[in-house]
Image (cartoon, rainbow, N blue to C red):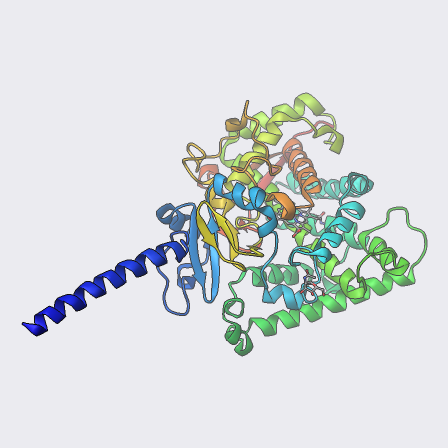
Length: 498
Ligand code: HEM
Ligand SMILES: *[C@@H]1O[C@H](CO)[C@@H](O)[C@H](O)[C@H]1NC(C)=O
Ligand SMILES: CC(=O)N[C@H]1CO[C@H](CO)[C@@H](O)[C@@H]1O
């Protein structure tokens, strides 16, 4: 009798205790966004494969547009809808404007003394202001117009030669070389050939940097593993950093020796000028110059030309869209001459093609990672300080709730629509938005318009090797820049009259 009484009392007390505890915790327990269950220690890292943008898009379909994951010890929030992206890049932009620690950029870009991976703060603000004012302003962009005309002209000439030989060309390689040439001329004032750089060659090394930069690095997620360097990444970063450093030292020395007055000042001239004048309001020495050079090189070299490559690939698969664009250019430019930069403003169909390309194939599918600087509540969900914020623009671009028939290339969907890609309309943000949005947007759009218009205006295109245009392989390789897995091989025919 006695013992049963005890038992009841104990059970009742326990029930009350759990009830109270629950009440208490309900108030205190923070609600994290939903997400896949994590494994001990590694969290959700095992869910990321070779194409993380696609893996994350699939997971978001199941768990929602605001998803909580854990990569090792690092909490991550995956954002996959326009509404959610607006919260992170506009409403609470200030909180999420930092960048996470990133081992590769730490070694390669001078302890993150850089712009694209700099943490939010006065250093980043000053550096970004300086870059926009000195390097990416309309005035500066215009001063390189003759250089762009000449470089694109060189490419057209070599394609024209191939056309008259009836030869197939590797268009991916050709426009990637164009991108490298234009970036080098703008930043260093001259072209650097492979042999100037390293035995491995200029573009191979940059390519390796881009690939390594995008490889999920265990050291970023497990501080202790970083020391062990199981993947050997740290060693490779350090090797790469040496190669870049030697190269930049050489360039800076060359610029210091040739102090003659140049007509167009390249980026190195401008940066060295600022360094020597001591006018910068922040610490600014050779390391900073080198970090910014590297940043601009990586950010500008492959981005715009990759967009052009995707656009041509899609146009090849939709010949009527190609003809429509050619017609628009013909009406504006005529068949007697090539395209000038001044022609590409206000070409409606050209802009529709570019928007549609960047929707389907965003150059930076996950933007660059952001990091929260303090605890924050978004849509009633708790986001911890120092969470990694990943904005999946690829998922947004491929979401049938946002874009009807998302897998099909239909430039016409932008007709009579005022959706733009400059960061105001969150269903299409290939350049990001807000404080961390791409500062090279103006130059990027100009380059894509000009190069794409020129190639489409000057040539008719067929896939090489008798591949039917509808069978063109469109698979992607993930990196900091999302590029074609297979090079685009095509046969050009010159179509202008001379
Ligand atoms: C089609 C061409 C381009 C695209 C699609 C593009 C896209 C982007 C994106 C998505 C970001 C990250 C935004 C974020 O994290 O929220 C970014 C950052 C950046 N881009 Fe671009 N970009 C392009 C061309 C360029 C060019 C030509 C330059 C410079 C010469 C440039 C310089 C930068 C820099 C310095 C950053 C880092 C900004 C910061 O962290 O504050 N980009 N870009
Ligand atoms: C880049 O410049 C080099 C050297 O002038 C030239 O041989 C190459 O053809 C250029 N690439 C393109 C695509 O114009
Ligand atoms: C300053 C900053 O915001 N981020 C990093 C880049 O370089 C600075 C200055 O050397 C470092 O302190 C930061 O780690």
